[in-house]
Image (cartoon, rainbow, N blue to C red; front, side, top):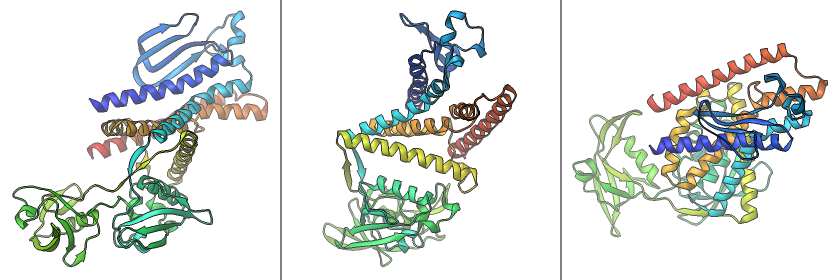
Length: 452
């Protein structure tokens, strides 16, 4: 139920803002708006406001909306209202009305990001877990437990890293641009300063998908290698492990953090099971234990498990900004997400990124529910991200989208005459076909993620 409600609220808000952008600018330009609809199909609710000829509608299908304006191309227009018809407006006004919808979504994203910046959000500190052997992070000298304090791209000045989420964001941008990135850190155990270069240019096109951070080797923040709740009649309980035990070594290998310990347990999948020699710290004293992980079959294959929660909470930091800085940061984040979205679309178009990155309504609904369950701040961040995506998508030069209409107006501005009806019809068909292909791929990806 939470997923459904969060999804409907998200769609309703984002569609309403998008259509309100068209509506508000149309009214400001002197165009008569006949209907403002949130949703498509049969109207569920309809009303008019005093002093306005516009009919406001909430329709049965929430996957879209529209603003219907007075237009001679859609029917006869009384002579005394011709000056209010959309098609009679100067090019600059028509372009402004069309562009206002996507821009309204982008402005909403700026506002939402700004609110989160002002309120502040708790995020894991940028202390990295132990990277896998063979990863770029291990090659750069990271062992786990390093606090990444700043990063540098090329010859640009180093930028401070606010949190682990900020670090992942900067790594993603650098990877998509095939840029190496220099990390500056302080080892949380020894206190020593260090630096190293992540060779992101070596990732290649194959890494531009969901496995990108895995290939880089920075997937999760550092957590202490502590044992949590121990389940009865499982290998951990039989070995004598207790909640609160801090694991020091496994088979003589020092354990740096919880992620590394979980990896050591999962990789112990053998038949018959093989014992591991653990050394744990309990009440300031070291104890040697023999742990025999059992074999378990999962969707990822066969793994080892011991029947205990592994890893404590990561160190957290509050990321909060002042009034002006919060707005500036919101604008920067909106711009960065927009550029990143366009880059990813371009990579997918030329085959340098997997089409599995396309998401449809089922995935959006799933993330809406998950973000809402984590609190209002995470839900607001989700809304901001989807609002940017909606704005960018509608600005693409596909004939059926706002960007396609802007493309027509660009042609009209350059040549002095509009696109003729024959070409308009052809382009509309191409645009609808491309959009249907994109929607089909996104829906297939949704089904594969959820039920695959």
